[in-house]
Image (cartoon, rainbow, N blue to C red; front, side, top):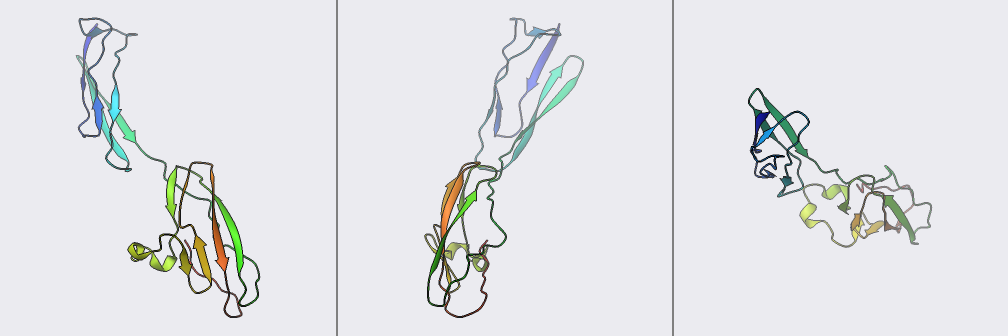
Length: 166
């Protein structure tokens, strides 16, 4: 039988409850267990790490704690080909993307506005150059779920055109 003491994590994001011992004496032996409740209360979506310590009469053990969030990601193509259209006409295509990892809310911003012009970036419809529009620029998706946005192309002159989107 040994005495065991639990030293709490140092950060203010992890909280360790008082242990619930199998006997009133607070002693444990091999094969016995102590119930602890670990609570995590973050203040942002950042990654966190800390540790708590188990102090026994013979040794000290450190138990690392980590809390991470899977970053949201989309299955965006490197290039989006809308097809051919006559000058002055409009071509509209729906583009479907899939959330390939963590849940998130996404915002499409024209490449020339990232990151310095983000405050002035459009909130509903993105006008990219004179020929392209994209809507909506905000959308949410859960892991594995699809989101759809509309791309409109209205060429004003002949040639191959392209602009940075993401």
